Amino acid sequence: MKRFLTAATLMLSAFAAPVAAQSCGGVYTVQRGDSLLLIADRQYQNVGRWSAIHTNNISAIGENPNSISVGMKLNLGCIDGLPTGLSGGTTATVTAAKPIARPAAKAAAIGALPLIKAVTADDFKPFTHRGLLNDGLMADVFQAALTSSASAEGFDTFWVNDWSAHLDPMMSSHIMDLAFPWAKPDCNSNPEHERCVNFHFSDPMFEYLVLMFVDKNRPIPFSKNSDIDGRTLCRPKGYTTHMLDSDGRNWVKGNKITLVQPVAVSACFEMLQQGKVDAVVLNEFTGRTAIKEMGLKDQIIAVQARPISITGLHVLIHKSNPNADALLATVNFGLQQIKDTGQYQQIVDTHMSTIWASF
Image 1 (tube, rainbow, N blue to C red):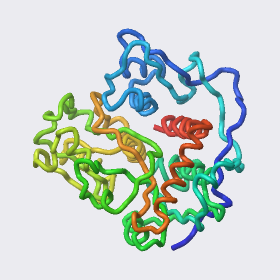
Image 2 (image 1 turned 135 degrees about the vertical axis):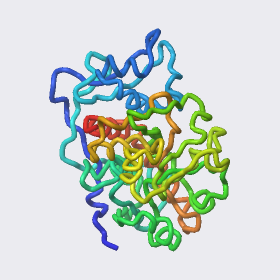
Image 3 (image 1 turned 180 degrees about the vertical axis):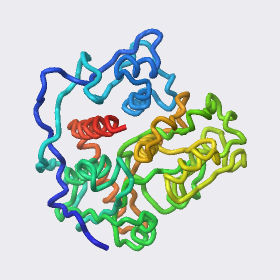
């Protein structure tokens, strides 16, 4: 196992003063007759940006993209210089990293902990990958939160590019204290799930849409769950499938669909091209990144009627860790700190602008 980062280098990126006169992004007020598709077309000149608006306003909209109402305020991120003319826009850009001050209340709230060891890995764009800005969105959020709330001895982040080894044996044997970012299964309907039984979950670091991607020439409807009965869906091996059984679907448990699970994301899209599956189920960012890298932007589209689900990414702590409660409090305290100061939203907005502009 090789250590790539140390606490001294895990500092939150600061943000510079505006560099252009015209602001970008801002707050949009929903008008009569609006839909996310229409707003995306008008404000971004690209109807495909509907999910960017949805993702940026998940807490207000919820899972159904049609649940917007007249007068609702939507935060629109800056993508390729659009939209302009809205209130609350920004022209901030990322500059060189520099440390942020840790809050004085931290020590009293959390108490002393030994050096915290966290594990993550590459190949989870845009969330964790060392070729991305600040190692990816989730690495940036994690580093900011732990910098804000770390113990006196600090923390180290280790990059181990074998995701299957993170939870067991690395976490179960306490080689590592924290693992990020991981999705949380539906522990209410499936309390026996291995992650639910053995791990504590932090507050969500980020929430995103899980979408169905289809061949543009073979679209499928998805206005109700029964539309998917009898279909063949692809989701890579190791990716949680709880969303396929939630919301009363029981697609997998009830044998209503055929689920294909190859090792690689790219294999799912290859099978979609070949007509071997009807749709690929992935979070929108991993899906769109793969589509771009495979040169399939003109062939594969996301089903626009509705997402499969909203999924959160979390930090995991093994329940058997002797410092489990303090570690969980440390992470949650740090997340709340950066949210309260506005640093969290600033990090997300910066990454989202870069991410969406790349699709």
